[in-house]
Length: 420
Image (cartoon, rainbow, N blue to C red):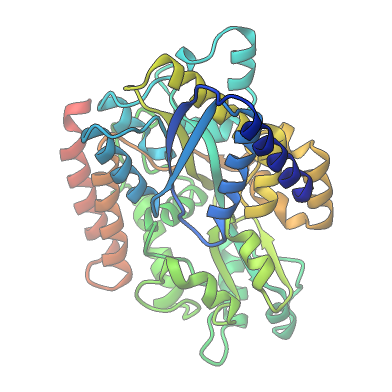
């Protein structure tokens, strides 16, 4: 299939050399590379396929680190007058981007029944962060939920069923103790990079949201939320199944591959990299429940910037529709481990065949049934930083969970007061 695509691209380039050049609309797209895998090559391939079908549109993809790096670089380009028409940025950036009047609602960029059908084609759980006050500001791409990766060989060695990951917090602790041996741990949950994301998953499982749906209220000091952070800390301090202090987001996948932990919680975006590099039998499962099952969604959305011409807006929509089409979304999911963003993607022959041969690729999608919108408020970055600091202060023993979360709550209330 890739060979045919390359031949098609070569043919298109050959034709372009022998025919008059088309007037091109040029797009600059900022794109994050946030987790493992050769994502630049995958995105470059999609862009090349788009160029072959749309020779009148030129896409310059600028790869810009993680989601925060991408937002900073894209907005800096806009503020300095450089070209920037669209970007994939954090789905949770929507409130701030709207407030700064930097992006356009997609409802204004598509029209008629066809446009409405396209907007309604995506999984509702993935649209939750991008739909605000009755309009759609972000289109899902590079989306994820947190999943539990586990080493089946270690499960067998510990006398555990290799086809049964922990389904509850109680099982997580009990199984974690059996899996903690010889300086290796039963479970690692990352607490750098995106600690708020992991904490939101735990809080949801404990039956409590961290924020209101309108982005103006947080519940960090709620007793159930405090209890959640106490549980996370207990995994190391009380139960000894996780390292004390913080667990690094960026090196956790390698620690899992090296056998330093029997289980890890991480983005489904790591799935293909783990599949390619694991020297042992591994499994993927939905996160365990306490009061309920649940994971926040995660990842990025497409945004179209406001300061663009009508021609650029039309070209940007054509690119986004191409990249999120069922066929492209299916190939993207297979290549990366991220979810196909629509039910139609999972109905394509390619993704059907792949998930039949590799069922773990369905876990993140299936978890959408119990998923919630990722933590997002106005002043998202500042509020989120306060929560991240509280989590890390508690896990490292610098503050009690109650004191750390009380401080984060007071800070969030100051940041959000004017938005109420």
